[in-house]
Length: 531
Image 1 (cartoon, one colour):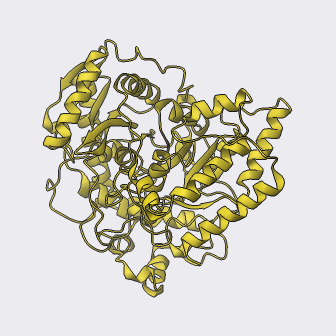
Image 2 (cartoon, rainbow, N blue to C red):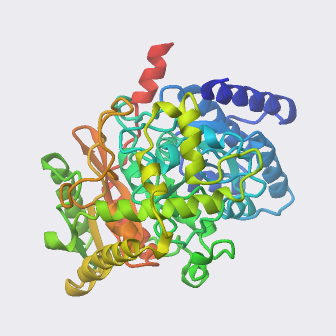
């Protein structure tokens, strides 16, 4: 059975459960409804979690065909919703997220559902334990609706193009189906954009939350490294991996972060998270930009005449809200793609083995070498290159390798002390703003094009705000900035480590003043045309 048939079968199964076990409820219109509104309507008794959950399932069933954003629906999604409704009836609500359906990227462990990371190698990876972020969402009462599609291995396998996952298929941008939805949290970005869930969860190593947020015109936050636990998430690099929320508004992702953030003994890197988390909704204010100095960087990837006009308009909005814009010199950032490549090549070998060590017995690969062998022999996986895996396998000494240590030290210093920290201190700014990513590119055949992590001369590509923030370990918030040539682009806000509350406040003030988000329509037109 192919993945689309698998999804369809799950949808039919869940729909039958709804008919048989759930009393008829008034349909709930979920399109473009914010998580905050869903939460408020549930609290006010205007709807039920079962009705909301069924509405999202119906939308996925109706519209996901041309998008391929959703891998599958959690078999017990409606049972989770019914349990939430029962809690509310008994006056035992677990909080604002109780009964709110969310989708998780397909590299995040959920018991009872395979975590494939887009690979047939993990087709039988049914985890015995939830990822920590899943556990926290469940504890808050959120309905884990299902899994969103993803670029295979978070996009870190081949130096050639690979749109989406081998296991789950390619994704398509809801604003133009011929365009990329970016990676690797592409399914999460699409699903948030087209209201397949109240919000979604993605992961980001060097831009995999913020870039899909930009391409799909949603808000997305890459938190400080380990503000959210990475335990139970298929890794690339624990030096840079982070888990974050994506949604149709800044308020929605702030509400998600309130639940997701916190220390976890299972992720030792997160030890300081509890001491640095806060209520991220409290500081959201339309007055947040008054008297603020923001530095702007222009020489980043995707910056051209078309995106410049949109960025200039955004800077005008920021100024209209009381912010002072400071033009930063080009040398505040540099092209660190080759340093990032080397860091990830070393880390994935060690970090992937640590994750696979806890996989069920049915999962045979336990190392990068095992995955290389699996890919070579599998009829579908063998169609794609694995140059990055092969480079990882060739490394020695892991994090103790002198070349690795030197590269990591240089990249971090250049991104933080000589990069963002310089912008904050020398130019007296509290955050840096920049274009998140360029205009969504056309989808190209798999195996063509060049991956950003391919070996190339240093300085041959512009620096990226997402990669620079990633290696610094700093938070990066992307908010819809408008359309360039009819396609979405986002505005990034980057601040020091643990500055999520500040960035969310800035992003909220900008969002409320600009109102730049526009709902996509291309996917609906495709469905209508197919009937």
